[in-house]
Length: 147
View 1: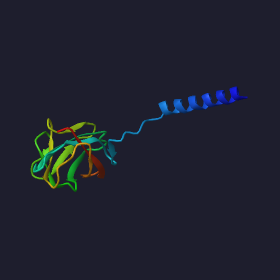
View 2: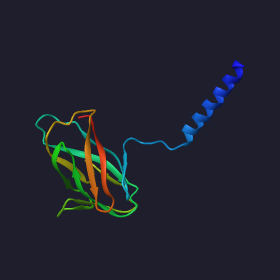
View 3: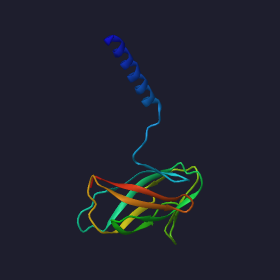
View 4: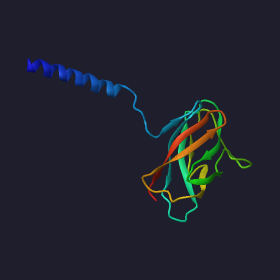
């Protein structure tokens, strides 16, 4: 009888492992709205007295042309956009074309948090609220990586 229990346990474990390999994996750093996906919003750690921080992230799976129209976080007084194609210099807006991937960060359109209220500490996450013209609001986590 112990052999039958062992065989049954092995079959159940194998079925569970097979299902785990087949089912899609959830990714902790992905955030969705109705028109797009935001992947891994992050910034570098800051020192005391530093007033700005550059935020990096990828925006893809854009189903309909949209615009990033606001960024808010409790750790900063505001946010500004600069440089890169698609940045509307007259207002806070970043155009996100349908079907295109957009890398926001130091080498593309730059999103800066301004008026930092506290130093951003490595390994911490902070609330980040992204507002899109058509997709609505995404409440994301802003991860802090190396300095």
